[in-house]
Length: 399
Image 1 (tube, rainbow, N blue to C red):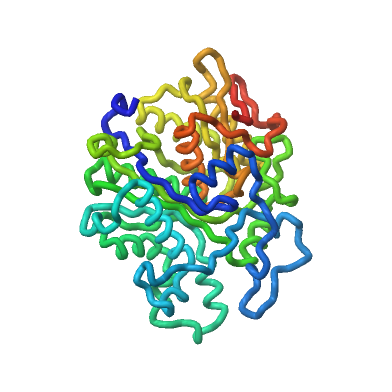
Image 2 (tube, rainbow, N blue to C red; image 1 turned 90 degrees about the vertical axis):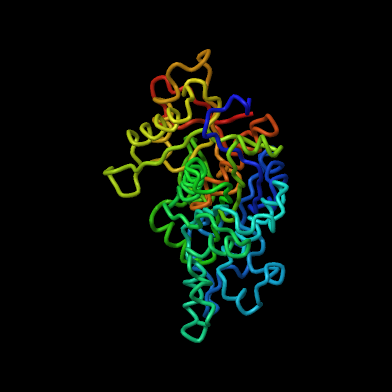
């Protein structure tokens, strides 16, 4: 099937992840297959501020629940040739992406040193600056000669390029919750245009500050009971998640020639904006339909032949119905055999990783392709009636 892919197809040849309850792709697949919900209480001591004060206790339970990594303060600085003093000043997101990039290259069978001076690109999606805010709470005494680079979000990608000696494009992408998928899109375009010959793409999100949970609760987006009910009648908000993932991309023609293991193939993608909707953070159905149609047209794929969609699926009563309606309109009509469109969301397992959410969904889909199975959504019960539309034909639980 790989040999039948169109020109410009991009192969995924390596994976890595560090997710709640899943420190590796293998562990992530086990978590997905078992339907495990990795949502827990916030780790003890995580949200203590510079003054030692913990997060407010008079909050809804959902504020203190999420998908967390057990440790975000450990790092083998010597392995990456970084001094302990500099490592202490580095945003843990920089440290995590270095590790994820290395592990993904290992999974692809690529010796990192072999990439030095190559036109290998690095694109990283993220949206948080928690560590910078935490550091500045300590005042000017905490600032060193390493601070400027250590807490600069743009340096997250540059750390990887610098350590590996890569000369392709290197940029951190912040398009809010779509950041890591936009990073994948940009990497594919860079590969197709000959700007780069391979790409490391990652997404990362760490919820270090209690103030982040307070912000999202007061915005009205958090689930008060700390559960993601994606495309479900019980949907009441999203659950925060953290961690990251990385993929190694290469033009399919080169991957086949080099004998690489191919997890999956990206044949088309598209990016747009919702434009003027009833609210700044409210998605637009017309725009979602437009971007879906454009992506399938670029890929040369009949929307009616699509078998599965990994959803954005935040579990909010506003966003999910709009997403479902757009999917129903574009993918529902003309479905082969009139069968349902199966959908799911990794957010029901590990929470919403925001800037890294898209790459988590991509990893889930690639693992499903590799194992030729679809894991069942962990919280699916009854689809929300507001999500249905004529001819939608979608189903929330997949197996």
